[in-house]
Length: 280
Image (cartoon, rainbow, N blue to C red; front, side):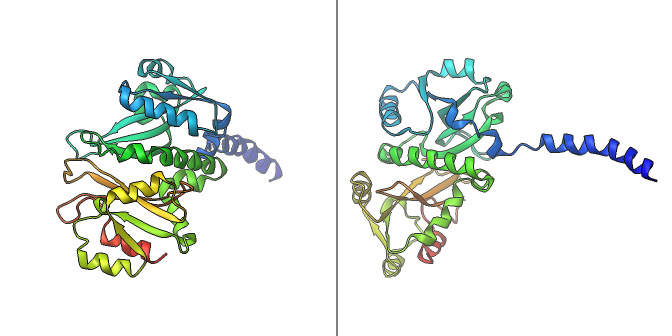
């Protein structure tokens, strides 16, 4: 019997060890992030690239970085020795064409031969409408770069952050305390009526004109969580709207959700979102 047990063990153990060796979580896959160079890919749009480059030089702090062209990205993307930060056009399944531009960080590797979507996605953040950017993307770009870096560092610490994505930041609302919630009027869904705006004001959710909200963001107003939404300009059914609340001073992300645009639910913060925020 003992001999039989040892024989079974000799057969099973290599299989178990092999299975264990194959377990490679996202946390483990990006554990070298701070040691590797991230290639920041320029878009070819001179106007955007200059602002993008300036903000990277000013704000990127968690790894060495270099700038490169899209052609250089294509030649280096299969190299696991690099990470890449680039602007990509996103098209969801029911969309006829790309509707949003996203900032995404991916890791190089052999999978890149099969396309960008097969590369390891470290973090992706919506930035602007592909066809008709509002201009607010330049105001929020510094904050989004800080959010990207914060998320990467957290993903290196725990797989919970890595796999749950930016929506994990919604837990931060529990510690928002008495911070002012500032919703730009352009970020409101049409279902939020003027009467509801007054009701939510009583719950310390303030709706203001978009210029005022943007100014608070640019001036790093203390204790202010400012809204930012990104969605396709044509607002076609099947597209998504992303909604964020960002601390104007620290750039900490407090709220990140998306919903599918439909006849019932247009773009912007929905009543459901404001109810969630009011419960903080």
